[in-house]
Length: 292
Image 1 (tube, rainbow, N blue to C red):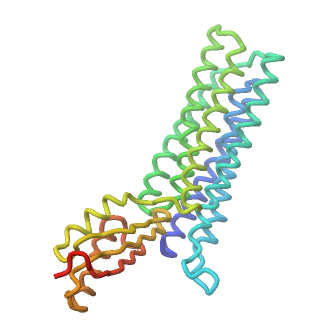
Image 2 (image 1 turned 90 degrees about the vertical axis):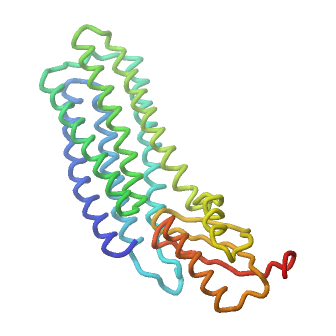
């Protein structure tokens, strides 16, 4: 991702940070006033959204730094590392919500539900939906792993807020108060699941797991007449920092100029499939077994 892309990501994260802080403050305040564990837990989850935005901003700042002698491949993994920290924050937040729910099981409190509190929760739910959709689309558009991870974090808010809204409405119409800590546990489940999803994605990048399907790369290479075979296909990285290398076997009598052009054409074709900024290195080897 170029500097302009990183700046756009930072601007998006700043706007979302302000919205998340506004939503979190409203939920925590109203949840405390009406004594709703579910709504308060939902508020702290929204607050964790805001913290994740801050972590994202820091990660994007470092990721935007240019290559240097110590980091010849750039600093893109700082963005991935920020995503990993977001997952850890989600695990901690989920644990906190579980402990709060257990306390409510031992000492249930009936929430003091008002129409205003239900309307507030509905408004914040709509805000979360808009934030999630816009952030994910921008993440896809800018190939930003942090925006996509953060949108996954926000997405869990949508289900959580919907569950809390239904629960509060149910209590208002006569359901038992124990349903409130039950919803808190459901909230914790969504938080922990979101943390796991982000952890799984970011750890794969940090540990250099396979990034793209080798079969798809093989299909591209074998579409070239002069390529006899392809092997040792490797890939690693993320959407905005993808590295691919492969070995191509050709006729031993193929002249250097033709082989050189073949390599460039294959590298361009792979970039056309997986992204213009992908670093693709194709090695040429003579096909000794089937040489003519």
